[in-house]
Length: 311
Image (cartoon, rainbow, N blue to C red; front, side, top):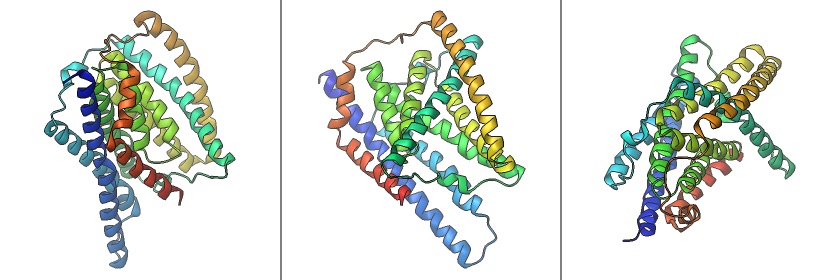
Protein backbone atom coordinates (compact mmCIF):
# COMPACT_ATOMS: atom_id res chain seq x y z
CA UNK A 1 0.00 0.00 0.00
CA UNK A 2 1.49 3.39 -1.01
CA UNK A 3 2.01 6.26 1.42
CA UNK A 4 -0.83 8.37 0.01
CA UNK A 5 -3.35 5.59 0.64
CA UNK A 6 -1.99 5.09 4.16
CA UNK A 7 -2.29 8.81 4.89
CA UNK A 8 -5.82 8.87 3.43
CA UNK A 9 -6.83 6.08 5.81
CA UNK A 10 -5.26 7.92 8.74
CA UNK A 11 -7.13 11.15 7.89
CA UNK A 12 -10.43 9.28 7.55
CA UNK A 13 -9.89 7.44 10.84
CA UNK A 14 -9.03 10.67 12.68
CA UNK A 15 -12.13 12.49 11.43
CA UNK A 16 -14.18 9.41 12.21
CA UNK A 17 -13.09 9.75 15.83
CA UNK A 18 -13.66 13.52 15.76
CA UNK A 19 -17.28 12.91 14.70
CA UNK A 20 -17.82 11.44 18.15
CA UNK A 21 -16.99 14.77 19.79
CA UNK A 22 -20.10 16.74 18.72
CA UNK A 23 -22.20 13.63 19.36
CA UNK A 24 -20.88 13.53 22.92
CA UNK A 25 -21.54 17.25 23.17
CA UNK A 26 -25.19 16.65 22.24
CA UNK A 27 -25.49 13.80 24.75
CA UNK A 28 -23.98 15.88 27.57
CA UNK A 29 -26.26 18.81 26.68
CA UNK A 30 -29.36 16.57 26.74
CA UNK A 31 -28.43 15.06 30.11
CA UNK A 32 -27.64 18.47 31.61
CA UNK A 33 -30.88 19.94 30.26
CA UNK A 34 -32.81 17.04 31.81
CA UNK A 35 -31.25 17.60 35.25
CA UNK A 36 -31.82 21.35 34.93
CA UNK A 37 -35.49 20.67 34.17
CA UNK A 38 -35.73 18.27 37.13
CA UNK A 39 -34.09 20.83 39.44
CA UNK A 40 -36.72 23.40 38.44
CA UNK A 41 -39.67 21.04 38.77
CA UNK A 42 -38.62 19.71 42.17
CA UNK A 43 -37.20 23.09 43.26
CA UNK A 44 -33.70 21.85 44.05
CA UNK A 45 -31.54 24.63 45.37
CA UNK A 46 -28.76 24.20 42.79
CA UNK A 47 -27.31 27.19 40.99
CA UNK A 48 -27.47 27.21 37.17
CA UNK A 49 -23.75 28.04 37.35
CA UNK A 50 -23.08 24.43 38.39
CA UNK A 51 -25.73 22.67 36.32
CA UNK A 52 -25.35 24.56 33.05
CA UNK A 53 -21.66 25.50 33.17
CA UNK A 54 -19.46 23.55 35.59
CA UNK A 55 -20.92 20.06 35.03
CA UNK A 56 -21.00 20.10 31.19
CA UNK A 57 -17.66 21.91 30.94
CA UNK A 58 -16.16 19.29 33.23
CA UNK A 59 -17.71 16.26 31.54
CA UNK A 60 -17.15 17.32 27.94
CA UNK A 61 -13.30 17.43 27.87
CA UNK A 62 -12.93 14.40 30.15
CA UNK A 63 -15.25 12.20 28.08
CA UNK A 64 -14.04 13.39 24.68
CA UNK A 65 -10.37 12.94 25.58
CA UNK A 66 -11.04 9.44 26.92
CA UNK A 67 -13.04 8.46 23.83
CA UNK A 68 -10.39 9.87 21.49
CA UNK A 69 -7.54 7.99 23.17
CA UNK A 70 -9.52 4.73 23.26
CA UNK A 71 -10.52 4.89 19.59
CA UNK A 72 -7.05 6.04 18.55
CA UNK A 73 -5.73 2.82 20.04
CA UNK A 74 -8.56 0.66 18.69
CA UNK A 75 -8.10 2.03 15.17
CA UNK A 76 -4.35 1.52 15.49
CA UNK A 77 -3.25 5.07 14.73
CA UNK A 78 0.33 4.70 15.95
CA UNK A 79 2.21 7.28 13.92
CA UNK A 80 3.00 9.32 17.02
CA UNK A 81 4.14 8.40 20.52
CA UNK A 82 4.32 10.58 23.61
CA UNK A 83 8.13 10.44 23.63
CA UNK A 84 8.21 11.94 20.11
CA UNK A 85 6.81 15.23 21.42
CA UNK A 86 8.27 15.51 24.89
CA UNK A 87 11.55 17.24 24.06
CA UNK A 88 13.09 19.51 26.68
CA UNK A 89 12.92 23.27 26.18
CA UNK A 90 15.33 25.78 27.68
CA UNK A 91 14.00 28.50 29.97
CA UNK A 92 14.96 31.11 27.37
CA UNK A 93 13.03 29.40 24.55
CA UNK A 94 9.99 28.85 26.77
CA UNK A 95 9.83 32.52 27.85
CA UNK A 96 10.27 33.74 24.27
CA UNK A 97 7.48 31.48 23.03
CA UNK A 98 5.14 32.69 25.78
CA UNK A 99 5.77 36.33 24.83
CA UNK A 100 5.40 35.56 21.12
CA UNK A 101 2.11 33.81 21.74
CA UNK A 102 0.82 36.69 23.89
CA UNK A 103 1.50 39.00 20.96
CA UNK A 104 -0.18 36.64 18.52
CA UNK A 105 -3.29 36.53 20.73
CA UNK A 106 -3.82 40.24 20.09
CA UNK A 107 -3.51 39.75 16.33
CA UNK A 108 -5.94 36.83 16.55
CA UNK A 109 -8.40 39.04 18.45
CA UNK A 110 -8.23 41.55 15.59
CA UNK A 111 -9.13 38.70 13.22
CA UNK A 112 -12.06 37.87 15.48
CA UNK A 113 -13.26 41.47 15.38
CA UNK A 114 -13.05 41.52 11.59
CA UNK A 115 -14.96 38.24 11.57
CA UNK A 116 -17.80 39.76 13.64
CA UNK A 117 -17.79 42.91 11.50
CA UNK A 118 -18.15 40.82 8.35
CA UNK A 119 -21.24 39.02 9.65
CA UNK A 120 -22.68 42.29 10.94
CA UNK A 121 -22.18 43.83 7.47
CA UNK A 122 -24.20 41.03 5.86
CA UNK A 123 -26.99 41.39 8.40
CA UNK A 124 -26.05 38.76 10.99
CA UNK A 125 -25.57 40.11 14.52
CA UNK A 126 -23.67 37.36 16.33
CA UNK A 127 -24.99 36.74 19.86
CA UNK A 128 -22.81 36.73 22.95
CA UNK A 129 -21.25 33.38 23.83
CA UNK A 130 -23.43 31.43 26.24
CA UNK A 131 -20.66 31.15 28.83
CA UNK A 132 -21.00 34.86 29.62
CA UNK A 133 -24.41 34.12 31.21
CA UNK A 134 -22.88 31.95 33.95
CA UNK A 135 -20.34 34.04 35.80
CA UNK A 136 -18.96 32.98 39.22
CA UNK A 137 -19.93 34.84 42.38
CA UNK A 138 -17.57 33.40 45.02
CA UNK A 139 -13.91 32.41 45.37
CA UNK A 140 -14.71 28.70 45.00
CA UNK A 141 -16.79 29.38 41.92
CA UNK A 142 -13.98 31.45 40.40
CA UNK A 143 -11.54 28.56 40.92
CA UNK A 144 -14.01 26.12 39.35
CA UNK A 145 -14.67 28.57 36.53
CA UNK A 146 -10.97 28.80 35.65
CA UNK A 147 -10.51 25.03 36.00
CA UNK A 148 -13.33 24.03 33.63
CA UNK A 149 -12.82 26.89 31.16
CA UNK A 150 -9.01 27.19 31.09
CA UNK A 151 -7.37 24.02 32.43
CA UNK A 152 -9.43 21.05 31.20
CA UNK A 153 -10.00 22.27 27.62
CA UNK A 154 -6.30 23.06 27.22
CA UNK A 155 -5.30 19.52 28.18
CA UNK A 156 -7.97 17.69 26.19
CA UNK A 157 -7.92 19.84 23.03
CA UNK A 158 -4.14 19.92 22.76
CA UNK A 159 -3.98 16.17 23.22
CA UNK A 160 -6.61 15.62 20.53
CA UNK A 161 -5.78 18.27 17.92
CA UNK A 162 -2.05 18.86 18.31
CA UNK A 163 -0.73 15.55 19.65
CA UNK A 164 -3.39 13.39 18.00
CA UNK A 165 -4.25 14.98 14.65
CA UNK A 166 -1.24 17.21 13.94
CA UNK A 167 1.26 14.74 15.35
CA UNK A 168 -0.18 11.77 13.47
CA UNK A 169 -0.26 13.59 10.13
CA UNK A 170 3.12 15.31 10.50
CA UNK A 171 4.92 12.19 9.25
CA UNK A 172 3.32 12.86 5.86
CA UNK A 173 3.55 16.67 5.69
CA UNK A 174 4.47 19.35 8.22
CA UNK A 175 2.45 22.20 6.70
CA UNK A 176 -0.38 19.86 5.70
CA UNK A 177 -0.71 18.49 9.25
CA UNK A 178 -0.85 22.01 10.71
CA UNK A 179 -3.56 23.09 8.25
CA UNK A 180 -5.72 19.99 8.73
CA UNK A 181 -5.48 20.07 12.54
CA UNK A 182 -6.16 23.82 12.74
CA UNK A 183 -9.18 23.51 10.42
CA UNK A 184 -10.59 20.67 12.54
CA UNK A 185 -9.84 22.68 15.69
CA UNK A 186 -11.71 25.69 14.33
CA UNK A 187 -14.73 23.72 13.16
CA UNK A 188 -14.89 21.92 16.52
CA UNK A 189 -15.60 25.19 18.34
CA UNK A 190 -18.98 25.22 16.62
CA UNK A 191 -19.64 28.98 16.70
CA UNK A 192 -19.27 31.66 14.04
CA UNK A 193 -17.80 33.95 16.71
CA UNK A 194 -14.84 31.64 17.30
CA UNK A 195 -14.37 29.99 13.89
CA UNK A 196 -11.71 32.28 12.38
CA UNK A 197 -9.99 32.88 15.73
CA UNK A 198 -9.81 29.16 16.53
CA UNK A 199 -8.48 28.20 13.08
CA UNK A 200 -5.75 30.85 13.30
CA UNK A 201 -4.91 29.94 16.91
CA UNK A 202 -4.77 26.27 15.93
CA UNK A 203 -2.32 27.11 13.15
CA UNK A 204 -0.01 29.00 15.56
CA UNK A 205 -0.21 26.23 18.16
CA UNK A 206 0.40 23.57 15.50
CA UNK A 207 3.51 25.38 14.31
CA UNK A 208 4.86 25.75 17.86
CA UNK A 209 4.04 22.10 18.59
CA UNK A 210 6.03 20.78 15.61
CA UNK A 211 8.76 23.41 15.92
CA UNK A 212 9.49 22.59 19.58
CA UNK A 213 8.41 18.92 19.50
CA UNK A 214 6.89 19.57 22.91
CA UNK A 215 3.21 19.08 23.77
CA UNK A 216 3.56 20.65 27.22
CA UNK A 217 4.30 24.12 25.84
CA UNK A 218 1.18 24.16 23.66
CA UNK A 219 -0.97 22.93 26.56
CA UNK A 220 0.37 25.81 28.66
CA UNK A 221 -0.12 28.38 25.87
CA UNK A 222 -3.66 27.13 25.28
CA UNK A 223 -4.34 27.38 29.02
CA UNK A 224 -2.84 30.89 29.03
CA UNK A 225 -5.22 32.02 26.27
CA UNK A 226 -8.27 30.68 28.07
CA UNK A 227 -7.06 32.00 31.43
CA UNK A 228 -6.65 35.52 30.05
CA UNK A 229 -10.18 35.35 28.63
CA UNK A 230 -11.44 34.29 32.07
CA UNK A 231 -9.64 37.21 33.71
CA UNK A 232 -11.14 39.67 31.20
CA UNK A 233 -14.66 38.37 31.89
CA UNK A 234 -14.12 38.54 35.65
CA UNK A 235 -12.80 42.12 35.42
CA UNK A 236 -15.81 43.20 33.34
CA UNK A 237 -18.21 41.47 35.74
CA UNK A 238 -16.71 43.03 38.86
CA UNK A 239 -15.44 46.44 37.71
CA UNK A 240 -17.47 47.20 34.60
CA UNK A 241 -16.88 47.55 30.87
CA UNK A 242 -14.65 50.62 31.16
CA UNK A 243 -12.17 48.79 33.43
CA UNK A 244 -12.24 45.80 31.07
CA UNK A 245 -11.46 47.98 28.02
CA UNK A 246 -8.67 49.85 29.81
CA UNK A 247 -7.05 46.63 31.05
CA UNK A 248 -7.40 45.04 27.65
CA UNK A 249 -5.78 47.96 25.82
CA UNK A 250 -2.83 48.13 28.24
CA UNK A 251 -2.26 44.39 28.02
CA UNK A 252 -2.63 44.45 24.22
CA UNK A 253 -0.02 47.18 23.83
CA UNK A 254 2.43 45.41 26.11
CA UNK A 255 1.85 42.04 24.44
CA UNK A 256 2.34 43.37 20.91
CA UNK A 257 5.59 45.12 21.84
CA UNK A 258 7.15 42.29 23.84
CA UNK A 259 5.85 39.73 21.36
CA UNK A 260 7.45 41.50 18.40
CA UNK A 261 10.81 41.81 20.18
CA UNK A 262 10.66 38.17 21.34
CA UNK A 263 9.85 36.97 17.79
CA UNK A 264 12.97 38.69 16.42
CA UNK A 265 15.16 37.15 19.13
CA UNK A 266 13.55 33.71 18.80
CA UNK A 267 13.82 33.33 15.03
CA UNK A 268 17.38 34.68 14.99
CA UNK A 269 18.34 32.17 17.67
CA UNK A 270 16.31 29.08 16.71
CA UNK A 271 15.42 29.70 13.08
CA UNK A 272 12.02 29.53 11.40
CA UNK A 273 12.05 26.09 9.79
CA UNK A 274 10.75 22.92 11.42
CA UNK A 275 13.18 20.00 11.59
CA UNK A 276 10.90 17.41 10.03
CA UNK A 277 10.93 16.07 6.50
CA UNK A 278 7.85 15.79 4.26
CA UNK A 279 6.97 12.47 2.68
CA UNK A 280 4.03 13.88 0.73
CA UNK A 281 3.27 17.34 -0.72
CA UNK A 282 1.28 19.48 1.71
CA UNK A 283 -1.46 20.01 -0.86
CA UNK A 284 -2.11 16.28 -1.16
CA UNK A 285 -2.51 15.87 2.60
CA UNK A 286 -4.84 18.88 2.81
CA UNK A 287 -6.95 17.59 -0.09
CA UNK A 288 -7.32 14.24 1.65
CA UNK A 289 -9.78 15.77 4.14
CA UNK A 290 -12.15 16.54 1.25
CA UNK A 291 -12.01 12.87 0.27
CA UNK A 292 -12.94 11.77 3.77
CA UNK A 293 -16.68 11.08 4.31
CA UNK A 294 -16.21 11.61 8.04
CA UNK A 295 -14.84 15.13 7.45
CA UNK A 296 -18.16 16.12 5.85
CA UNK A 297 -20.13 14.48 8.65
CA UNK A 298 -18.00 16.24 11.27
CA UNK A 299 -18.44 19.59 9.50
CA UNK A 300 -22.19 19.08 8.98
CA UNK A 301 -22.82 18.39 12.66
CA UNK A 302 -20.72 21.36 13.78
CA UNK A 303 -22.46 23.68 11.29
CA UNK A 304 -25.72 22.53 12.87
CA UNK A 305 -24.38 23.76 16.23
CA UNK A 306 -23.44 27.10 14.65
CA UNK A 307 -26.98 27.57 13.32
CA UNK A 308 -28.48 26.64 16.69
CA UNK A 309 -26.24 29.21 18.37
CA UNK A 310 -27.51 31.87 15.98
CA UNK A 311 -31.12 30.93 16.77
